[in-house]
Length: 100
Image (cartoon, rainbow, N blue to C red; front, side, top):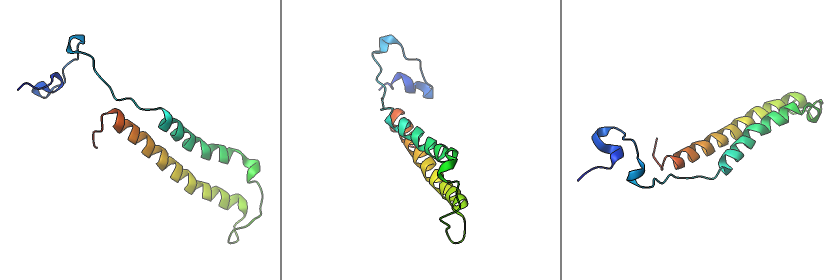
């Protein structure tokens, strides 16, 4: 039995037009858009200073200005993780479902 051209002798072989049409997995750009939004949300929240430039309400004695920013550290971590998972899942889909 002969192996496909891509796997002969353990080396990749150039694909030519004579080999026939080559199919490639396609994926929707939606995960990249969602990932971009997830990454943009913390920046917008922190750059909109008027939304949190105040002292009250205090949380366990910490003024709102400070605990609001610390809360966004946690939220940004969660959103970055979501963006990472979405992009990695899309990359795996485009590679044909190969595992790590």
